[in-house]
Length: 184
Length: 359
Image (tube, rainbow over all chains, first blue to last red; front, top):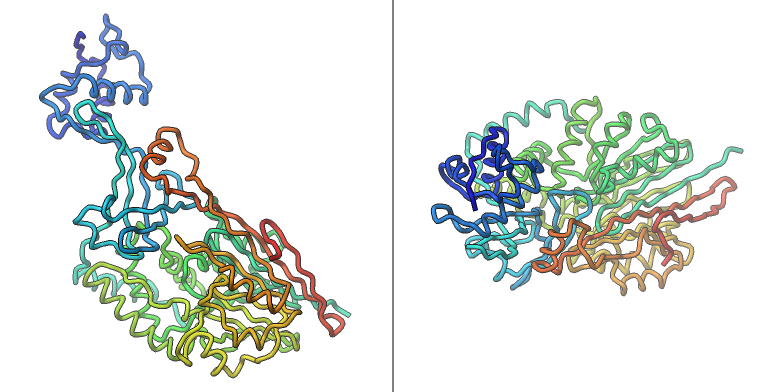
């Protein structure tokens, strides 16, 4: 396969953004992209301009390329999350919990599902499991040295402690904000 | 002779999306108890109902009650408050409102991005209240919250009890401490005990709206407190009973039902779904039906066997990774009972809309 430099600056930026999204490169991704071997069906060989400017298609072609033509200098494993939910635990027993799930791409009605504490939750997150706890559930694909598989991931919400300064700020702002609220 | 009509409508949704009660009184004043929204549009269902009835919300809605701050009873209530500027607004009694408002703010600081959070809706209510020149009103046992002497209509709150109010005061302090030290919001303990049960007297006719009240082992809590300690509650047959807590065994008090229900009583309820538990419980429904055949529910229970419709790649991944994922569908039904008191005796007609059915 011949290699081509991507000459079109606008499209170069687009490819860079796409590659960033794919979370493949941690440093110097711009240089890495410029060295990228690209599926030649996308390119006009003479003008070195990528013909097909449809974003989704480029994503797909880059993914395919990276599955099949990884370079030793690049990371071999990457993930693509394709959907995300926010979950709230509504019931817990010894081994499982049931959660109310809100699809963050498309709100509206909610869904419910069961999760296994052992299989779905990391050891670090297990202390957070209780009724009312909030977590995020991702579904996606992982590519690992050319092998692709589906992945489900649960991450519990962790919040930093409220500092004393923040407590004071909130207390003061509440007095001011609701000074006109009165009751009989 | 002018017609004397009262209409009480229970708006309910399947799946725990909420309920509301909307009452038209004799003089065309309206009362709204609790609120819920259509999850797809965000539209407040009591507002939609009132608009369909061509009610002038600004002038005709006189009373709004938030029986408690469970999500399925509070969503959209701030929108109604904004429109019903002249309505009195009642919430369950809290001794220290400033502390409670502080707790709301801390909870929002931690959970600002969490769906399904009633504190967000309550904060919106506070925002509306702060712009009105009307007090935020609190209801507890034996408060009269509406009094129309001309038409002989009185509405009493029968709860929360004094014991529950005192305990909640301490609970708020614990919740604040929990949030400020560990950034975790602990769930309310026994939130249903704090709800407002309403007793409505229209001339000689009685209506009891049970909210989510539950039974208790203590004489000074729950239905025990109402039955034993309330001076406003008349222990006589009611013409309408809103079954408490979606027909759960926790909400069922035989002692109460024996006194207030007979074959002429109309019973209404809304279903609820919470993870593994469907309400109403079938056995409890059968108990209520022993008193009267006039039992209505706003929708039958239903859980889809599938998740929401999505694009193929996501649907495929879900099927493989999480086959237990199921959508909880939104359904909407209304049970409207029309009471005609014009002649001195009462005639009643119940109409069903949407998914509402007679059990």
